[in-house]
Image 1 (tube, rainbow, N blue to C red):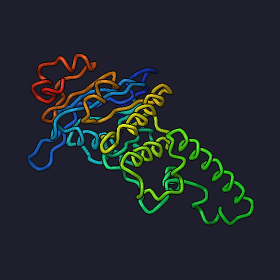
Image 2: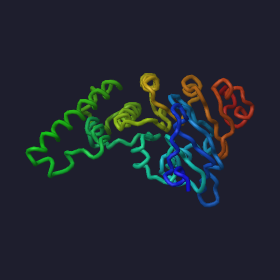
Image 3: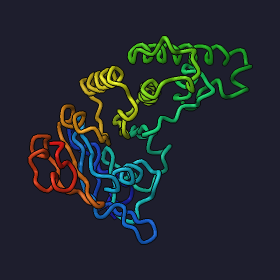
Image 4: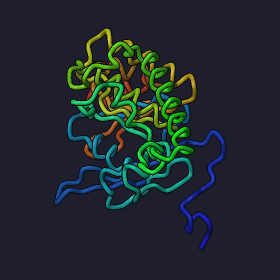
Length: 270
């Protein structure tokens, strides 16, 4: 057995695609939701995943991030097969997703929601919290966490909402909160599910600005989005799904001119 077969780690070359999806298939009863789907996402890119309702986009996202286990196929992230890992394990590898409907804890403040992004906090251990020698470390860690939270809130321009209950935020503000919270997990790549849904034009512009700023810092994005203007104006590469399969992929201009895509999805929008 080779080392790759034994460990699932493939030692990717620098610059290699961080995410590779190969021959992915997922069925629910007799319904084939994802049918032999393969694609890769270029490092440091904003890649769009589009298609009509029922095309298999959300199921593909769920298979990549461990919400669903595919019937067959393979998902490789940074050279490691992650196909059978759970969502927490996958997030721990640096592949983090947001959801179409933001999943904040509505009765907690924005600040409290942000602090939940940090796992294995020393302050969660009662013994460490009350032991004099260790208590100092807990306080220093909490101070460092708070500093990072405030910096991130300022980056997304929602620091003025820090003490507001998350349930009182608008849809767009919740999306900003979810993306900023995801950023605190130190991801290598972010999968965004309908990031602009329910977002007003002002907040949409702000959200897109932040995504491009993060891309410039080296982050990689794969996003599902129904707004074709958002996809065509902000993505370098677009993957089109139809009936569970990849119908076409390429730069936005090529997708807009693809007769198969026009017939299957875009219609008069191009």
